[in-house]
Length: 191
Image (cartoon, rainbow, N blue to C red):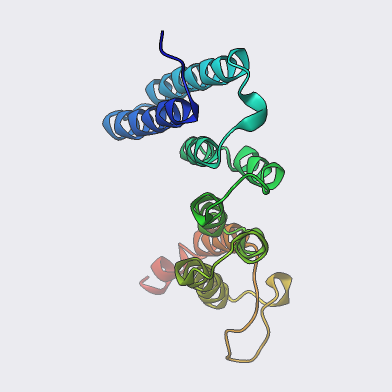
C-alpha cells in the first residue's frame, strides 16, 4: 500500500489551516468558532499520532514545522508557536516560519520578541518585519502622547519618537481609560 512521507503530513497540516481560516470567516458565534478549533486540534493530534506510528516523529521536516506553526498562529496559540520555533531552530530551513511568528508578535505588541526572532533566527533581512515593528512603536508613541502619558511607558519629554516600547496593549488600554474618564468633559462644556 501507500506509505505516507513528510509531504503527506505537511499537506495535512496545510489543509487543516486552510479549512480553519475558511470556517472562521463563515462563522460569527464564539461557540461555533470554538467547536471549529476543537475539531482542528483533534485533527492535529491525529497527524502527530500518525507521525509517531510511522516512526517519523524524530525527523519532522521544516515544511511540517512551518505548517504546524502557521496553524498555531491561526488559533492564537502564539506561546506554543514560539516554543516550537525555538525548539526546532536547527530543523527550520527557511525564514517563512520565523517570519510568521515574528509578525504575530509584532502585531500583538511584543516588539522585543519580534525583533529577537527576526534578528537572531532569520538568515536574511526582511524589511516588512522591521516596518511592522516601527509602525507599532509609532502607534505606541502616538497613543501615549495623545493620552498624556509620560515616563511610566518610557516616553520622554522631547519630540523625537525614538523611544522603544514593548507595551502597545498597555498604552492602548491606558488611552481608552483616559478617554473613558474624560468622556463627559465635553458634554459639561456645552451646558
